[in-house]
Image (tube, rainbow, N blue to C red):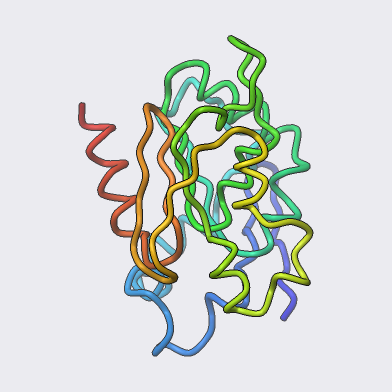
Length: 191
């Protein structure tokens, strides 16, 4: 399935990974809610491009998952700079599933280390990747890359909800972790 962008000056419709549109019986409740809720789905359809987001207006950045981000996030200098600025400003950096790939190119300006170095993190695990048959297709395994950069990796059984919070970095293991991560994000922002 190909996704088209509808572009205007400052907003564009992000592509939706085809697996999110899979049959209802294998979507998470959170995925179904977003697809069914016209108000929020419309907000998604009219998202800002990250190059147009003034980070001083926001307290958190959230990086969604999906296999496509493995090609998009790690090589994106604009995203890496944005994540680094949020992290160094003690703002929240949250990511779920494959979204922690956005941590891989981000290096703290304060200590010149990858921002995941020495931090507890999680993501879609190598075992989960193998179970969905993508190990030989994806350009790298996010779990392996986080560990190579010094991340302290915490995982639960495949497809089990898992959220890890370490300072201002919040990560969720898989789509089933959406609710846990969202709750943790709300809790941290409420402090």
